[in-house]
Length: 354
Image 1 (cartoon, rainbow, N blue to C red):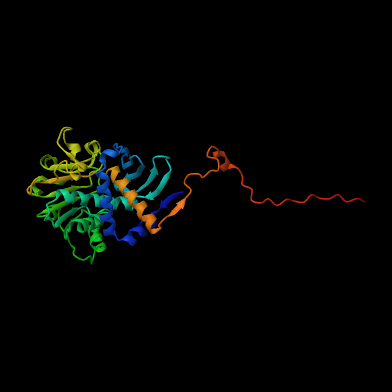
Image 2: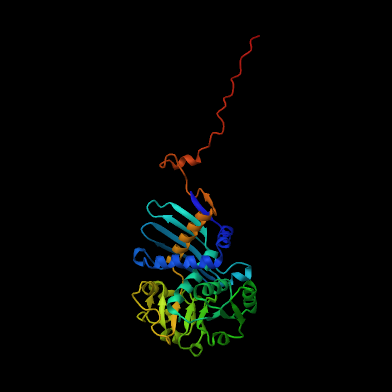
């Protein structure tokens, strides 16, 4: 049987554990798996682009588990009452190919993206960082704020979105959260000024310059989350040229990240090398660091592994017959045969003589 987790199941799981706890625990699962980097079979995600967006498949596996995620990115969807991002994923046993878990991943992706952002900032931001500017206040924004508060102690966040209603939504959703000060700024420059960390998480599929060089101050850590497909960026090229750039998986980031603006030989460091101690994250206090995050399948592996473990521990979700259970594994055709529901015999009619 396959464990099935739908949207309501995942929401129940998060509410039982607490979102901050889920972020902390999922970040640790991600850290554990990045430290096993060389054990994974990796490839860039497979993307099908259309004028309105992109649909992608994101596979990765190690010797025991295989995962994939189906995910879209359609910024125009909100006009029709649909989410910009929708996703589901599966976790399977490599030895037999048996699907172990089928799960929603829209909510899960928001959590794993925020957990990854905050985990990277632990290694790249200055240790005394306490303030963040958050540019783009859509569906991902609350998760980013809570992750940075829980993992790094960020207690002041300045918000900006071209849609004022998005910022108001964020403030309302996080109202009353202890130890957190939220301020809506009138511009990107106002939000960024003096911030220790700057997170950009915008949705438009375009070459954009959300951040420009004059906004960047020595010692800032930049968390670029929104640039996640070819033809989509958020940072001016000069910022990327002068920052210390950390990526998840270079072959994918060269196509989809901020570094798609750069020559193929421009220097970058993969995140696993920082976690493993093979390379430094931040080299000195005045350095500008950039986590050029596009989202990588290894993080989905970690997220699904976490969801399966917690779902089993809390008995959340249901077991479904996603693949057949057969008495004879070579006889699939038997599934199409009518099943006998009764073995009661019908008595024969007797002849009556005159």
